[in-house]
Length: 438
Length: 195
Image (cartoon, rainbow over all chains, first blue to last red; front, side, top):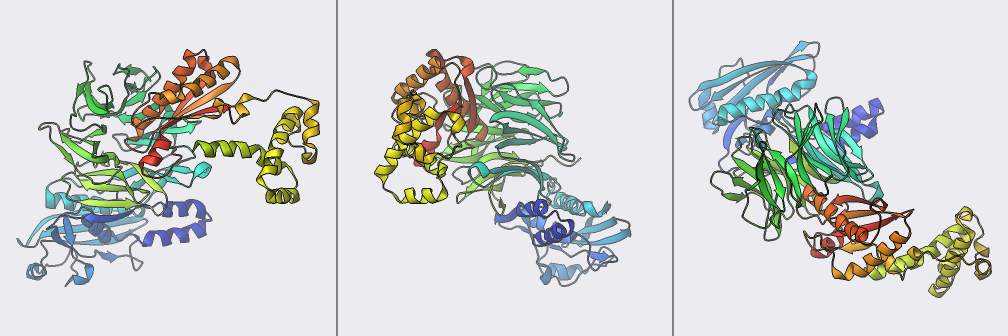
């Protein structure tokens, strides 16, 4: 975490683009684990052996892997100084030594410079007690992709050791707000899931809301008030920055949510006088109205099968979560516990709904199990907002307050692992976890 | 709160006058008593009115006294009168509610009457929510509050196209605390006269 800012300062001076780059550095998310799993699995990640023309590779691949495993809360990697030996993927492993220091698993590897801008990563994962290799992998990448390749390695290791896919090689979009009054500046960012490589996508003096990833991870839909306070929905391509106004009807145009096939956006539009749920076909621009009620209908989210939409409505007198089929028919109320349930998101497996739930005057992230009807409160903040599932369904990222400061936090769906993600200055809010990289 | 808004409105013209003077004069007058400033305030406001907008930038601060105002008597715009109900531009709401409380009827009647009789005047009604709850729901709630104000004005003869409604949801708080006092100030609709 410490290497990045100094690198950026040097780059900034050399390129005379200090302003832009230092804002990137200042906005980098710092991630701390605030609560890990008791009995996290001890694993030894040996620094990968480097072979190349410089003393060090451009990215410390094994350190990235170690940090990812720590961040998951499920693993307890041994400190590098406690390692008795530094084998690589070509070494013979002396398993009894690794058993002695209490490591259940062992990860060894190499990074080789191949010439040009190409690098090869090789690594092996061993079960120390069985004295067996679980698997071995090789990948060739450009220097620019080394960090992503390291996260990909973490995903592979995580899957080998837990049986579930990892979500390290993913990104998060979020919004920061800095400054006061007329000088208040809002920025939409995209960063790697570990907070690195933060890139500003949009700067505005007006609020930016509800960033949502397209299912292919290439575009973001969001609502912006930049047009004299008129809420308008844009779709922006992350790689090029190119954007398109997709909904600018009179009244509110907000809460965009991509259909699983990426062809449609569910929106909340108030052009008829009050907010209703609509589905916009992005290619034909055709709009289809899904709700018809004088109440507020907003914050739509798709079920993974694309057949229904859950949304917030106060048609029953207080905000609650409802579900409506795309085939038509009446909206069915899903939440009955508590006087405020809003901003639902459906888990990737479709079995749970995360939402903001008010309990004793506090607004917290809760998860509703659709089959059992059980509601579990996962967080302990006063004003928690915007829950977003990791694509593997293991964690939920959300916005919370720390002091009077807006920060992001993540909690595992079982409530056992907690992380806090903060920027150095300003408020962070509206996190959205990207889908898996294709 | 109201007292502060009113005093700020009362002092504003005096400040504007001071701003027009030379830097030296500003300092002298700044040291003067409150009574003096109030005297100046009336003269300044009426003087500026009589002279019209064109001479706003003129450096005639010293002549804007009682004599120049006597020559031409233009009616005061009631919008500028700090004692008129029109001076109240902010209406407050209960949590998750958009019903207009009876105490604001008189104020809104005054705005309706003014707008109905000045069809060329336009307002933007900005709806806001406190920070509790979710952002998009609060955008909707802010809009519903602004629409509640608009509906009342339209019912009393204000033309639909005189009023623009926007919502800032919870995005633009005026009070930054995380307590009931701050929240109460943030749950509001603001009538903003465009000029």
